[in-house]
Structure formats: C-alpha cells, structure tokens
Amino acid sequence: MVIEPLRSYGRGRDADGGRYISLIFGTNLTDVIITGNNGTINSQGSPWWVKYRAGQLKYTRLYLIELMYSDGIQISNLTLIDSPSWNVHPIYSSNIIIQGITILALVRSPNTDGINLDSCTNTRIEDCYIVSGDDCVAVKGGWDEYGITYGMQLVLSLWEL
Image (cartoon, helix red, strand yellow):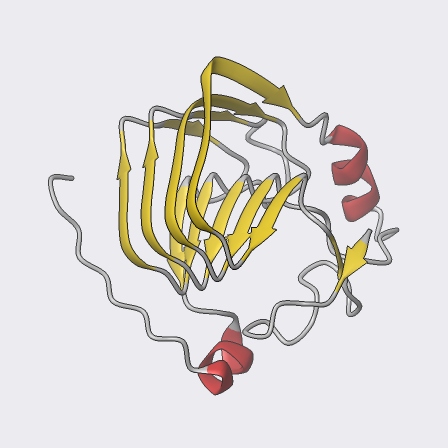
C-alpha cells in the first residue's frame, strides 16, 4: 500500500511520489506496547536495497516500525534484521521508551537507520545494540525546507552517554 509523503518531508525520500506503508504502522494511538520475548523480525531488505541502488523505485521504501501522532509508546525486547530502510521511526509523537532492542543490517545497506526520533518529545532510548548501514540513532525534525515550513519543535537533551 502506498501512502502520502510525510508533511515535514514534502516528498518521498527515495522517489518524488509517496511511500510504501511501514510493516508495523499506526497513527493517533495512545499507550502502545510493541514487545517480544527477544523475538525477531527479519524484513529481508536486500531486494529493496538492490532496487534503490539501481534507481528502480517508484516510491520510497517502507520503514519497519512507524508510529505517527501517538503518545505513550514502548518498543522493547525485539531483534530487527535487514529493514528495507529505516528500522524504528516514531514521528510527531511523545512519551516514547525504546529499550532492549537489537537492530542489525549490513553496513553497506543504504539508509537503514536504526532509530529515527523525528519531531518527538519526551523520549528515552536505553540498552539497545545497533549495527546499520547509516545512522544508528538520528534525531531530526523533518527534512530541509519542508521541516522548517512544517515547524514541528525539536528539543534535545542527552544524558549518560
């Protein structure tokens, strides 16, 4: 399923059009727990990486987990392997705890960011192990002029690094 680009991005990241919906997706949710007893989700992203590198994508690759406009999110005790693109992408959300997850992707895999906190508030990441083809943890507020125009506030405090 293809959905619209994010408002703070203005267009797709991989292609000008929309984007494929994430494997685990939700919007306007409250008190969400995504957890497993160290369960594994293998996204088998390599066919997506090949198409991305060859310029064959009509839409932006899907993210593994994306929660939008949500409050009270906990993601824990999971192993995520070979996402087509970003692994965990909370956006326009607050009160987020991400703990005890392992994210693995080949270091040559394109833009397989581990955790992207995007226009979020009151977040905590702890006890995670991440190997990715790009950023392990990224904190952002949209993309270029679109993020500025959309105007979501980004406040960052780092503790005990």
